[in-house]
Length: 214
Image 1 (cartoon, rainbow, N blue to C red):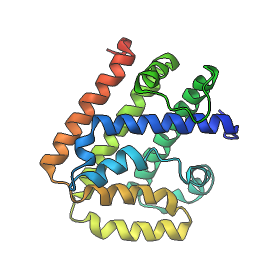
Image 2 (tube, rainbow, N blue to C red):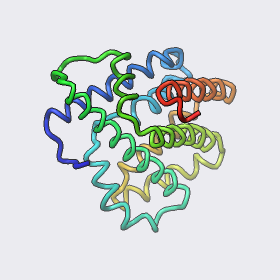
Image 3 (cartoon, helix red, strand yellow):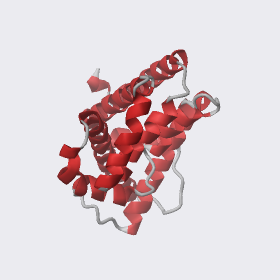
Image 4 (cartoon, helix red, strand yellow):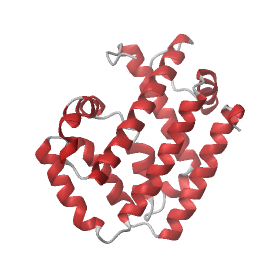
């Protein structure tokens, strides 16, 4: 789908992102209100979905990154590339949902409900892509937490950030860095409870929309 968006489609996508983040707050309110987990919840349910700086991020992903990725450590590349993939698949699905919303004569500035969002989500389809999207989200959750708990990570993350800045791709690495710092303060028992709940509720949401995936 073209990245040259009409103002109407841009607004519709923004509404789709807003209502999705609202769902996360409803599902995981406990974690948005605990000092130990608020940064982690904000990172995985807001920062990753935030549209701020999206154009710059995508431009780097499509141009500069391919030219310099061979100069980065393998672990940094893998983390960045998973985020690029997640960004691409999420953006594509959000834009398609935004277009579907416009097709239903949505008026700019109107907030849709959670029920309306679910109906759009289900009607749009793309069950296999949604399944892959969720798998990557859950993998990233686990990967960032495991990384943050390794003692050596603290000695690696800053040099990796410095290399990313030198190569001109820091906005890409910044999201990896944010995920690292957001999960550092979280105890293992807390994280495991969080992960278990996210895994359960997100799979339930997906299967309710697309029972054929069972």
